[in-house]
Image (cartoon, rainbow, N blue to C red; front, side):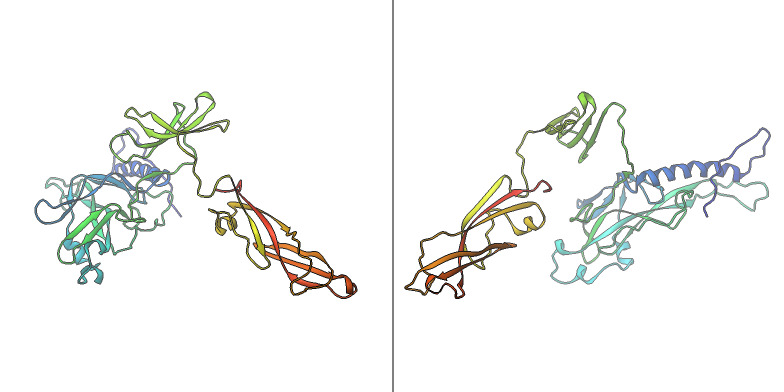
Length: 386
């Protein structure tokens, strides 16, 4: 059961204990941690970029200053540039044979995740910091420090810890934040470092948990910030003016959006480019003659998967062939009457049969033979296609 959240209250003449003052600090830290934990997602907030420096002739991986928030809501601040130590990777024993196997190209070596972990450490107490009745100098500061660690290839960040809703930051075991990846040279140094070396390999960045976002100005802008400037960055604008509209495009230097796509509240759509679809658009037609047991062909550009997924709807019309044959195959004499006995479709396979009645032996069973028919296939994009 979680503890009740309490904040200190004071009165005139009160003797303040260290516990009273500490409660005031813990209350503020707990509020901030719960805000960051439940209204935001953990990850990098700013900075913490990995760069490679080869100016000294030796590959050095450096981490820029910045801040991250872990899954407990703890802020981890890196206040200076750090140079990553490759011997820590070696000492942790995370190497696998593929790192050092002969003939392995550098680009084929695995990527090791780099983690940032926050921790508290007591500062060295000054020599005069002795309290009444204390045995010696006591620390008067707690440094919010951090450690860098490495993981095995494929290892991800920690799962969210089990934590009570009233808990403050760092109240559980240390939680790692993924900040990037390094590549070992197989000997004594790093080979390379990247934030996103491949698809599916990326650090997490701090985000927002919200079911509603409200712009006080009446205009909400969502921007993909891929750099330090807004110019030529993709953005979506939801504008409440003129009944409401949504715009998408690239921003200019002043933050305006050069519209590539716009839709208003009435559903009117305006685009500056072409509308493309992953499936064929319009109505496509295929026609011809087909024999019993064969499969109806699809129009060019249409696949069976699109039909199975409901993206394409087919309409097929079959018509018995009307030809001038007077007798069934193999008959050279006599008078016969032809009856289109069967002309149907099962899936895309046709079944076509004819019955031939001999007038001279009218009461005898007719001859039933496989035949051919004409077909027309209409294929159009379903209204449920995405």
